[in-house]
Length: 133
Image (cartoon, rainbow, N blue to C red):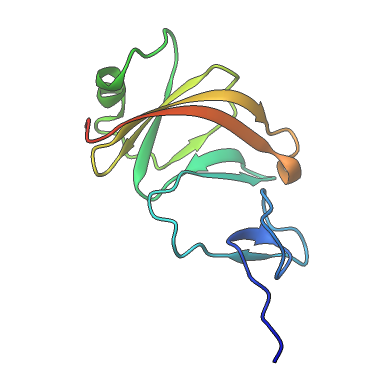
């Protein structure tokens, strides 16, 4: 009996581990059936890198730093953007996130490298306030 290779979700050569960025020739996209409420980092050569979610909305904070969940709630209430381009997000930039269940999060960009979409990455610190919305 031959064992089938384990397939993780994301973009990767069939049967191999995860890879960020858009699928390259010979790669396939594998849907993540267990990803509910995820914030995804995606990059496309023609569209740049973005944060995306099916269940949360995003607002980039410009100006003074956000103090907490009340400010993030004010900034995200009424938002419909489930996709946030990261072109203007430098290190230290804050992003408010509101999940449809009421959770509020403050995402702070630590490191961002998006010049080459095939090897792009972002690291961030996240604080979550449960049911704060």
